[in-house]
Image (cartoon, rainbow, N blue to C red):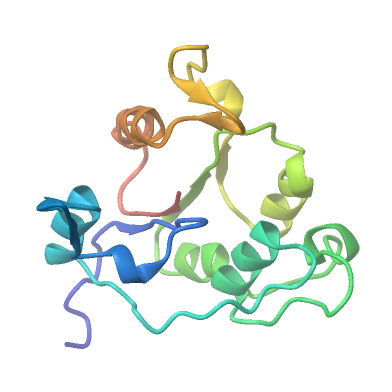
Length: 167
């Protein structure tokens, strides 16, 4: 399959606080994750993905995905090592002609993302200012998933092609 996806867009969706045992399962006759089930049929799904985060939790998981490196045993890499130089996925994809972006509907400085995403060489960071967030479409930590994906898909239509992006 070498080269089969050359020039195609790469969209990496990372789900926090979602366990894989609910995928393709039903509860009282209804699918628990209908949208994920459909997406999996049209893409790749990596089932053997294990928690390796440290004190950085979400930010550490992002670091692992982009760098294939373990986080620190103490502190969050996004804070303690944002000044380092990395050979991260956005830069690697850029070397192959891809535009890179990342979507996170939160304050850009949350978990030091504004600094770290620049260090990782993302071309564009779509933060909370890129989204319409209001009382109806948000809860707790921010934008509801459905609205996040709907608004993000609209923003993706404007991106240069091919692109690598992470949601």
